[in-house]
Image (cartoon, rainbow, N blue to C red; front, side):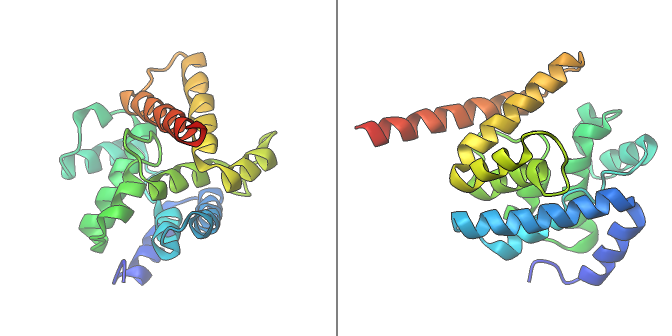
Amino acid sequence: MICTKTDALEIFMKEHLDKSRYEHSLGVERMARTLAGIYGCDEAKTGFAGRYHDIAKCFDQETMDEYVRRYDLSESLIGNKSLAHSKVGAAILEHEFGVSDEEVLEMVRWHTTGKAGMNTAEEILYVSDAIEDGRGYAGLKALQKLAREDLDAACIAIMEFAIDDILSKGKVLDKDTIEARDYIITKIKQKDRREND
């Protein structure tokens, strides 16, 4: 069992997420389970991580900063809700709801930025967050199709879009995202070389 306090976790989620974020979370859970089935990952774990990945997303800045300090997370997260919510969410799951499965915690912890060395389950959550059915951007269906056929390609497409979007807004790009992108690019190149040898 991933969590023995699921009822309390559900209450927490419903109390702290607005309706659209709650619906998004359910959509990510569904997509994560679908992709886990395709790529041979544990559907229960990826589904759980998908459902609860954004439990801290709707905190105001003061509350987010309080959680960052409470769980002794990186000071670089202070004042940055966008980056902090995934790290805070993982800390809440671990410390307040007793989630001890490190794979689940890592999926939640890195779903915003990605990281170098991402495993398949972490890629699944990262991709599912961007392509769940409730997202309404142009090209969603094509990206969903790509994710079902080539997870790495979908992951890199989403990362490239995120990087362009962040830079176009004049924001600072998190180093973890750059390292994650470089890792996936290297992984794709190595796969291509193996297939061509």
